[in-house]
Length: 247
Image (cartoon, rainbow, N blue to C red; front, side):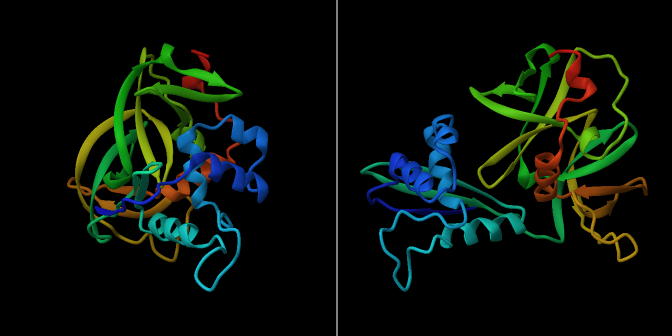
């Protein structure tokens, strides 16, 4: 965990919002629907800058964008805390090693997958009745924040579980400032896993970063959080059977 902090002027969220609108990075309508914390996250957009002029070292809007891209490639997280007139703190969380990592083992039907624990924010079990739909997107309120939901079955085009249950398991994952709730069938637990390449025969698969051999000799695919966010963004239909019966 790396913390970079100052006691300067802080980040003015309103100024950030207006600059992003002026540079056509977001629309005024979208900005009005965002929270103040979401305005601050706009500093990570490519091309964003509050500088009035471009110099040799600033004003091009590439600095924070590059920072976030490198952190995402390492499956890390970055959070921003700021107060106007008091200062700003950036907290960066990176995996200790990329060869051996602690993974959360989950199940979809009878297949086991591993999620890097450094990308897991929290795990919750909630009643299905607490899942709601906002403009076609399934969401759930966790710690006073609305988190979008997606079923891993939908991402991987797998049949949904037919088990009748009043509760669902949700794994909340993070990528930089983004959050996403993954609906899974079963939680097995966390353990250290050795990352293995899937090999050139399979090639690069969106949403999969490698594989590991479990204690019983079976193989579990290691999920790539960056790829999962891309798949979730591109998925047209976000409401699965597990959500349809409650919204």
